[in-house]
Length: 191
Ligand SMILES: Cc1cc2nc3c(=O)[nH]c(=O)nc-3n(C[C@H](O)[C@H](O)[C@H](O)COP(=O)(O)O)c2cc1C
Image (cartoon, rainbow, N blue to C red; front, side, top):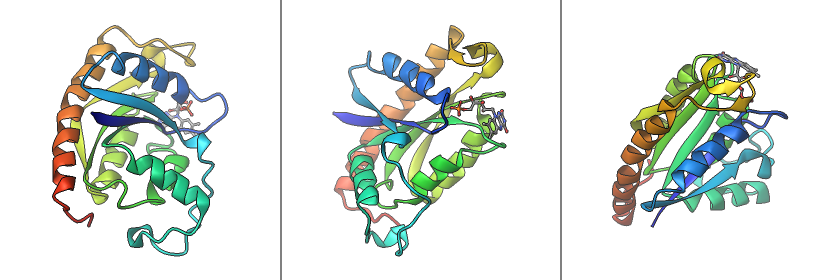
């Protein structure tokens, strides 16, 4: 069975990201073509990147890196639930991505962005970052806007069409996750 991580891309107290991730998880788990798990950056408590060797070398020294690597390696695909901070992703998410290398490679990813304009600029940045890590990114994405898809800008209540957008994205993601899984079984190099 395809395993998909729903990665919460913010760590801020009072973050909207947690509610968005729960909405994604609630809808996604109605599917029977994959299993879904929320992965919360807060649970890994990563410092700013503190590994002496570049992650591409795969020589991790710290227990926090090994725990993060083991979790990320266990998935076939990722749904990044990302806020937009200053037209990009959060520093916490970029740092967590930078910590690893081979664990991301030859996997698939989709996006649920949120923010004043649906997190769209953050998702554009994230697409570039993940391309460097050999992650196949699907074109459909969900864009939740604070004004239309949240109550009081803080309680997620997506407009009715957003569930369909999420389904469209997952409909692209799961087959790509399967294709990349087959690719990995052929031992395609990470970079
Ligand atoms: C540091 C910071 C910068 C932000 N910059 C933007 C921005 O450039 N564009 C935007 O649409 N929203 C921006 N916002 C609004 C956030 O996208 C919105 O508050 C969102 O809920 C943040 O995610 P979080 O609540 O999960 O932390 C910013 C919020 C913060 C905290």
